[in-house]
Length: 406
Image (cartoon, rainbow, N blue to C red; front, side, top):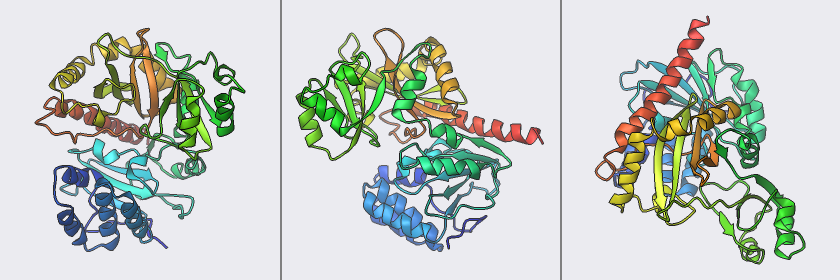
């Protein structure tokens, strides 16, 4: 049976942030694997190699190595440089793609925080006593598959005598349709109604047997469609007419989909702008702004690295964020924080033509990091330090608040 409890080995495992930084910087994969292979602890060795392969794009090998590591141990320790941490953070994660948990160690680069990653699933034993910690953070994301696990975690986190951040019951409310329902009436927020429908319903629309308006309140084409469980824009499409549904459904085996009205959020210059905001203890922080000619924006494919003009806009957005964008949308951010009730939430959003905050997505998994090359994005390190300092400050206040109650 895997070891769960307070395991503190001399050779701790290499975390995702440091390993991904090495992969992105161009270090040869074989060299990184050799470094990981020299770890005398087999579980740590396997877990580090799992992260290396995932970061290099070989998810299948990464998950195989992760599974082998978890057969040996469920708890993985990342110490501080001097071994005397300011905060001992216990992070609850689930096995699988490392991006399907809140990437906590990316948010704590440079801070004196020791991180213990405790892997849990319905197929692993739950601990009867939690490892020593000062603050507990639940990093598991919301999916249909994760709902039973999040329900069981409610009992597990109650074992903690310390502060628990991102309570599992609140994470469970992060499905696209529930986020839409909770935020639709929020002041200053525009979020299209998102519904969950089965394949047969979309086929009836495709064949003209049912109108989109019968499914979607005030609905009309174009609409946005994506399979339930998809992330990062995968299999996302804009459908402009019923006949186009046939090609879309014909390319996918999925049985359930999310459908929402398409909002044209182009600016006067014809570009779409989408920003990622981290809401930390209720306060908004800019993480990036992407500009694109395409409505479906991903930062990596928006051409930000290739366009000095786009980067100038992003730099200005970050520099003025606190007294401009954040202040302008303060009621919206306040309402989102109150209605979702999470200590850490990532919001992908834009400004609607109405001037309201147009929310596309709100979850606890959005990738927030400081991995972009400084020579190309010289304005980002200072901004990301603000984000990371806010996350660290939230942990510190949570620890102190709990200690003061004793």
